[in-house]
Image 1 (cartoon, helix red, strand yellow):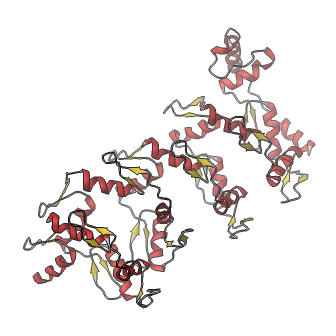
Image 2 (cartoon, rainbow, N blue to C red; image 1 turned 180 degrees about the horizontal axis):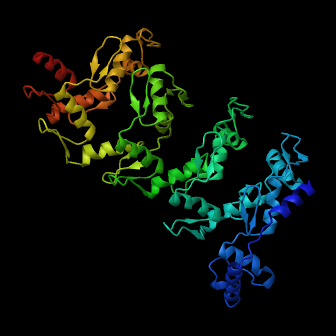
Length: 509
């Protein structure tokens, strides 16, 4: 092994000693010798001549030691020497637990800590422990808030030089790491490494609780938190805990109200870059993913996969509290707030809190905004929301794009078609324990049970009349407000509810 490494070392330890480089170094040494250490831009160091060469390398970012195998550069010869062990074919040190092999005994020792769950490096501030010293070093930046590496383009600062290096690829659009299998390019080597697992079918790391398998041990480790319900990362503002640090990072943006990602076409801003990426597809109008059953198209493949569950009736996401199942993970996430009573979105006007941001927006439009910015070009009727205008326009065009494949009945909205499809279901798995009446949907059974309980939880604040369903209360309120949102485009007659409106339209046919 030593012979193997020695050959590599002689072949790869190339030091750039051009006259220009020497002059730069010499001038920089002189400048440093005349300086007080406190004037230096990074933490104070000893300016002894023996250490000056190493220290100057950190300033001018020169990395003269280059690996001949992968071309990675280093500022110190010992770092290159340590790196060469990665390429050594001789790996005599084998782990007795998982049979993983290592070139050096010290690497095996570090690896064994993973199995022993040994974490000898502890933080003096919060006492969090780590397996490796460099993990502790990176963690300490959280307490110091020090970010000495700043981007010259956008001024964003980073804890580590390698984080800055990876960030710079965003501005250059450079993607130097290319997959040999599918030619997909990545700006970071770690991203390519993760991607390569997609081509391999091997998943050696299996969960003992649910038998789900993973490509990497770190993915299994993260997954195990879902069973242990471990949430080690807490928000400093609201104390909400998260299983993953990345989730805490995303959550913190809720408090900052910072929306750094702006669309260049319409100037709309977003909290998350992924939301901006998805939004940009609305400008292109391109929907490349089509459902083979109903031909509906989607911007993203994940949206198509979620849509397919409408046809398969698959609901893989189940609530641990009440066992209610959902087709989408987001739906389960929002549902869980009904148990936790978490309502992170607050109205700035009246202080009312909401579980979803969409509910807050709807609340603000209905109660606090008197503006109706969306106007129908046919009948000049104003609307608060664009979606309301969109559905209203269908009443003029008589267009009903959503057609039932069973009976050919057409609907204005896809949601109405979805509800209608239940009428064709012969299977009605949800039965009432009182009268044995069966229902296709659990929600319909829930509403039906109010008939037996005679519970009327939704009361009108104006006259005190109570209703079993909230939708009935909404219709009733129009008696007081005299609101008639459904208007006939033929004779201009208006109606307070949609059912009467659609029945009226048949008169003109």
